Amino acid sequence: MDIQWYPGHMTKAKRQMQEDLKLIDLIIELIDARIPESGRNPDIRTMGQQKGRLIILNKADLADEKKNQQWLNYYKSTGAEVMLADSRSRASLKTVQPLVLSACKEKLERDARRGIKNRPIRAMVAGIPNVGKSTFINSIAGRASAKTGNKPGVTKGRQWIRLSKGLELLDTPGILWPKFDDPEAGVRLALVGSVRDEILQTEELSLKLLEFLTAEYPGLLSARYNIEETGTPAELLEKVAESRKCLTKGGALSYEKAAGILLDDFRGGAIGRITLETP
Ligand SMILES: Nc1nc2c(ncn2[C@@H]2O[C@H](COP(=O)(O)OP(=O)(O)OP(=O)(O)O)[C@@H](O)[C@H]2O)c(=O)[nH]1
Ligand SMILES: [Mg+2]
Image (cartoon, rainbow, N blue to C red; front, side):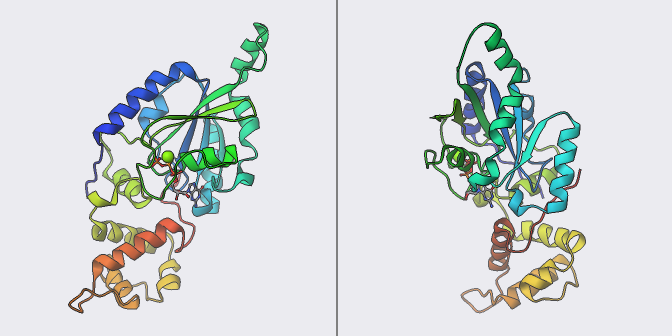
């Protein structure tokens, strides 16, 4: 299954971000905690190497708790400033401020040496589509300044959000990269909802999910859909369709509807807390 999606507006957004590097001290890079490796855009990873960086493993509330710790430790071992977050909750973002200061230590020391006081820290919030950038900014700001939505491509242009606490945040449109070398990365990005559903074959995608879940998280499917976890992914999809009474207009089983339910349930955490990859 080869998923590729790189619309022209992402090229434009990337160019704008490169332009904006001049204005910022720090990149706050949001990564989906369910795909901490495939969900990391290599273009963002290499962008602004000379700037401070804070990595946020976002949507940690939807990801496997044990794997959250493994990924946190993994990123720490690379020397990164990193934290887990559920950006919908302001409380989970309490440690952002101290980590931002720590990630900008050199800049603050340079300012102090030059006698510059109280210049706000400017940070670009970057990441793949739908990872929660605008939600993160709104929670930090304590107000709904940036538009959010549960689909990729909600933020269309850049927007500065100025906070009172000496921090200014730049919201950016989610960007992917021109070619996913690993086809599995495309599948994972699609599963977490970072690729537009319109270009996806949802049935095929749901088969990938079923295959993964029976192998890595046995028991979750039977608990959610009241089905026996035996058989091929296609047979499991059929069982879900039966159990959820997914029918076409003609009265036949609708695999498409069942696939839609599976993907929605997975994305919303209804099947359980699931991480698709291990460090
Ligand atoms: N469970 C959970 N949902 C989140 C979290 N952060 C954001 N969301 C939800 O994810 C969806 C996307 O959030 P946005 O803030 O619009 O994402 P974005 O990264 O700005 O997306 P684009 O602007 O399209 O690139 C929304 O439905 C949010 O409520 C989180 O930490 N946990
Ligand atoms: Mg946004």
